[in-house]
Image (cartoon, rainbow, N blue to C red; front, side, top):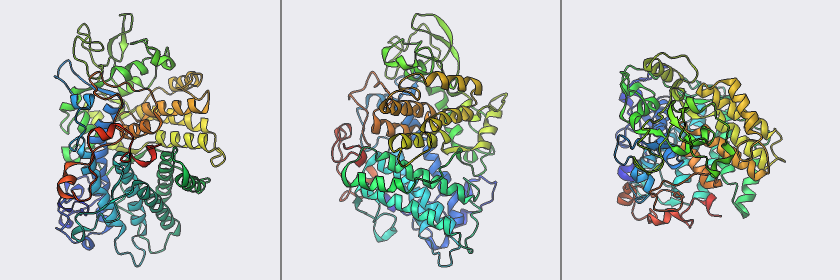
Length: 544
């Protein structure tokens, strides 16, 4: 690994944690792994920085990657020449393509590993170690889901091993599941010497909630294995049985170390990346990102394209649409103006279909993404509210849709009504975005009469509905998760950009060039072409 980045420590001198502070001091993470001895940094000091920095990658690089891959975002080609051309053409999915995901998550996984291995003879660190195991599993799963085989058993060893071997991805999945079970055991034990995790910036030390999140992450790992066969299927089914009576998370899991407008560094990275900086000035990404024509048409009830691929949406406008993207003067398929979403067709330029020069309006990210339903007067109010409510690590909607799928696929194990979980997911997403509750309820009733959109039809059609609603619910929240789910299920319908040079999305990413430079003896030699076909390099759960 480059510069031994698998053992990353937080500078002890830079750590001055307070419950409400969000200064660079304690959020800063040292990328020189040998600058401080691991035993000098306690989990209490390491935890907030590790979680906060991991979320930065989720709210930044992964937000853009997932929304573009799922054709939820487009670039404003009216004002910028060829925005996101690389993502749309897919002509150079190489060792530089979204390398920030690997290089942003792996150091944080190393932080959690370091916490997990902290000396704990008296059980004082039990709760911190449990949290570390949970967060390690959460983010390491994304490495596996996007890259397949990865360094694990020999990783995080510092100078003892700077060129760790690559482990089988299925084996790592099993280890991650065991880590979650170990975390639950530590929480269940409730040792009298265990210190309260006062630096917990997610649940503020509520270990019951951490266990519920652990169970939910475990369920996600197992549901991801829905298509495996043989011994892996036997393993999956046995592990699913252990969750039969488990409690799963049923709230928005948010990260908040005390975000504020004191400086850009102290802001919620979500709004800082995509809307405004600490002084309220518009950031460059805000003018670039617009809703795609594909998503705008789906949310507007197929009035823009009147295309058979969107039949399930026809005539049903989603009440979440104007909380996700801004209203402008749009045009329907008959050329009639209406107030609603106006998108851009991925890959096209002004004058081409989906980018008419007669209407250059575009819908941008709406305030509902940042402030929900709270009344706001201007962007300063939005900034304050977004900093107050924090960033979504794992949404309530995602948890409920995950449970809905589990109950649908394995009803003998999960006895709760899958339809209830499905409906709860849509409602909770509406609440987070600030959509009108009555309109959301009406939408659910109407959607549930539509195959592939609501809870009706065959099991396969209900899977399509789950994935369609997950696509909407994870847009602007955790879209990379949805891209992975799309690769697993093939749902929902997601058109390629007009400039795409391949018939499908990549099934995985290429290892970053830092790996080929520093760990060349071990890193698999993946070509750009390899990622567009299923082969031995495809993540194990998607090889069937």
